Length: 296
Length: 204
Image: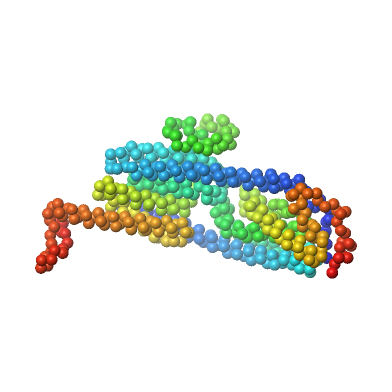
């Protein structure tokens, strides 16, 4: 026989407490979390857009004619992202487990890494390291930095500020003094995924530079791309579907670029041979098969 | 050029080391979670006795048995906590999400059966041997706790049906009580209930 030890309704959680728990405690907690998540998603989207713009900007470089101007603008825009959007993300993550919200901003973060990697490659011709990225390109400040010392252009990010600024305005004293540096670490996987995206830009750079008639850059790029590809080979497919997919894309880009470089090389040699008139045939009877011999 | 290759291979070697370590950690977590889920299944089997006539007539001892098994659950959660750094809870939380939801359900079922009340987050956490708040270390996520309560609602509706079959009307009435209070219906007054003597007459 099921014996109920206590039978009065006081042993059930009273109506008031229940509706309080569900209606306010739990709901508030969940809402707070979801709101934060949404804010970060929004920021992430803005970061993605701005990073894409930087990449397109960098693709606009042709030769040395506009390189300096473009690089300067790209640099400005990268530091704009840091001081506005990324700083806001970092602020949302203060005293949170970033992995709880990683899903919300991984897309933006990867795009940003891609943009910075591309910028660094165009500038120095090498691959950005994670430490360099964190030290130089992730210098974040607590929110009201805009007044500090940078009269830079802010036309692009005018979104989503009113509700973000609200919770920060509690201590006006603090704002006047130094903005506190805040930061977050880039998860290694995100970093590598960002680099994988960046290889797509290298492919585009290589193809574009051929269009520009540059005869050196494509070969440099393909060389570099091959090294990066070797790196990815080392990692293999042990870290998830996303990376595998990106490495497959990388293989296709590399294949495309290598073919293009092959064609280019053949044409260059061909043309040189014709121009200099040193196209010699190894005669075998009167067949005209042969290989070009370039005399230097 | 040699410099570039060096940098690149360094980057990827670092990443490789990271991956290897990460996989080790995940392997350990998976092992710990497997034992947890095994114990959870055992508790579940124990508690399923309430749908049988023999179990239903002695719910408290069934609960006692299940409660004793939670001691090993607590130890297993301790072991799980030691497999990864505490601040990376959400990095790995997918591994135990299902298990902790199940355990939250089991805990709240026990608490309901013992005292006919809806378990609070604190009680469930205490039974599992985990914290309630994120700041206090390994905790039960609010969503997981609520998920457990949803499963509890399912299970109680099943219990209500079964206990009618077993002609134990008291239980059927009682398991509706939490829903009643949520819908803001008046709780049944104690004197309106049938006394155990009355019910006994219906018993087969």
